[in-house]
Amino acid sequence: MPDNVAQRVDHHQRIAIVLFNLGGPDRPEATRPFLLNLFRDPAILRVPFFIRPLLAWWIARARVAPATANYALLGGKSPLLEETRQQAEALEQALPQAASGFAAKCFIAMRYWHPFSDEAVREVQAWQPDRILLLPLYPQYSTTTTGSSLTAWREAAARAGLAVSTTVLCCYFEDDRYVRSITDRLRNEYTAARAKLSAGLKLRVLFSAHGLPETIVRRGDPYQFQIERTAEAVMRAWGDPDIDWTVCYQSRATPQKWLDPSTEAEIERAAHDRVAVLVVPIAFVSEHSETLVELDVEYRDLAEKLGVTGYFRLPTPNADPDFIIALAHLAQATLGNGPGLCSYASGRACPDRHTACPLRRSRDR
Image (cartoon, rainbow, N blue to C red; front, side, top):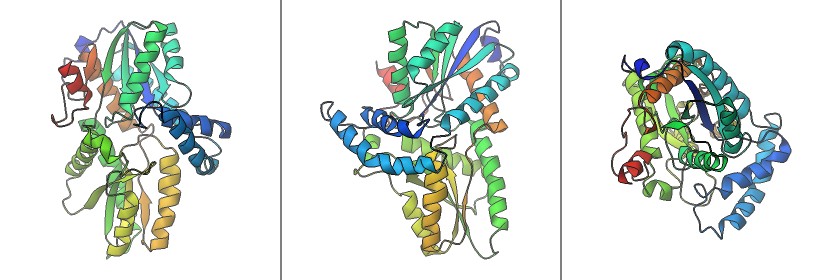
């Protein structure tokens, strides 16, 4: 981060930092409406608008029972909001030191359950900031996550008449501090897992990311590219060429062909190769059903049934101090770029073939 970044931020300004995240049901009765919100999103279910409501209803109806059962394992609700609040509080505490003392307050805008963008906009409006920073808790950009959240925010801000200078961070998939925060925790977890295994048993690292339909990637979404670059950056930072690792994708939700290889397929391959696995949820920064249930329960059960000798999982960062410091420095650097859209590298970080990159779209307009 350049030394003069802090000089470009007025220390007397009030900065509203809005954290984007997915959201999750806060009680069993909220599971079905949460799923309906998810599948009604045109960024998620890419079918003609007149078909989407009926198809969303059908998918939500089919998924509500298993989703409710999953959330029952977590006490009947998603832990995501509480964890995002902890991240927001930790970031507020980290910012004065990292950003030389400007007044900053964090707000939360969830995409599919409360607090929605409309609620966050009202809170921001009441606080009367001089500037707004939109900071996604999705390190890798996708039209289905950050892109959808950004659309929801802009629509909510327009409805409320919120007109404040706004800076948007679209991604930080290869940011040095973010990568280092993963690498340090992963190295420690690998060492701990290795100590529990026999000397002759190999340990494979599975970087597991939420999947996407292949059609979305073929239409220019940069998500897969950014996931792979994050994993490569972590392994470079680790600096051990003997580590066996691969990238895979979980959480298939529709009948379409999704990104390969799947995490299930990689667990099956590990069983065939007679190696243990350490699963790293590379696209998630908070624990939720896809880590606490899908990875910790369903995939662990699969590994045991297939005879995988050793199944380990790296926890998500949550409010890990190194991750929070990485976010604080990203916030400072992004604000130093002034209003508008930028990546962790200021300019565009994706090759031109990724036509859905928001910086390319911004440039092409």
